[in-house]
Amino acid sequence: MELTLSVIKADIGGYVGHSSSHPDVVQKAKEKLVHAQGQGLLTDHHVTVCGDDLQLIMTHQRGEDSEQIHKLAWDTFVECTNVAKSLKLHGAGQDLLADAFSGNVRGMGPGIAEMQISEREAETIIIFMADKTASGAWNLPLYKMFADPFNTIGLVIASNMHSGFTFEVHDVKESKKITFNAPEEIYDMLVFLGAPGRYAVKAVYHKESGEIAAVSSTERLSLMAGRYIGKDDPVCIIRSQGKFPAVGEILEPFASPHIVEGWMRGSHHGPLMPVAVRESNPSRFDGP
Image (cartoon, rainbow, N blue to C red; front, side, top):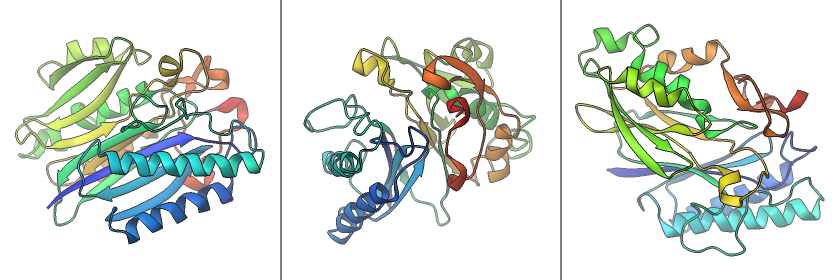
């Protein structure tokens, strides 16, 4: 069965400052998605937060870039913004750059990662969410997961992974993309991954089967708005087990916090700290 997983996020109001999310905003989002699932629009859903970013995690059978799903997300963000404004939260509606929905949320402010898959019997998926950093923050972890044999031993000893993976890298300033095959082209690929402010891994594919393995949001908020109004706060979806890295291999790259751009006023570099959802409240110097 073809299933689409959509993760759409937006900063629509912080509590306190940009550090966290108000429970009333989260509750409004839950009500919207429960109603949508009851109408058959969604197969399943989950609402969560990362810092002051509202995260809508939805499964459905309407494919990627579905106008119905994107409108649901947009309408949810608008209604949650109204709640945020009534509570006088900081930066209410910050990521909503357009006045009205126009068929797709891409380019309208929210970040989005979607993948359409043939669901396995046991479909293990991990979703990473980040606040106060940019879309290139996933470059190094994704490289380690899918191209570094010292991190992912499955690349060496698992026959269904030994041929490697294909990386789709986006130039977020020029709206271009290029693909690299690992391990054959990792030296060339690292030239781009080493400049995460401009180049970001958008997707990773299993080379032999062509199946999607990972996808991230690469929207640059400042480029869409024409000015600095906040960091991109990216999300990343990763499939695990079988022909994909094991859960432990996916988590291991975060054992050593690597340096990312972002932090206070989006103007610094520092380590990206992995934390539990309940602890994802950037406060000290807006550390991601």
